[in-house]
Length: 80
Image (cartoon, rainbow, N blue to C red):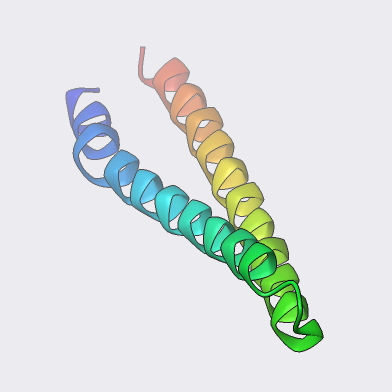
């Protein structure tokens, strides 16, 4: 049980937080591109694409986090 908690605390959570942060930065970069390049349709489209991919990344990371928590809870029930 301690091993599972240690792996979750030391390895999995920091990786998920890092990827969450990267997805958020990608989204915010898209927002900045969209706002700062209002006169250029190509740059606005590129900014929209970055925002969409940032939201997709955030959604995927939230889903991964939820699945890992579900699996961890299931495994802990069997070990107790």
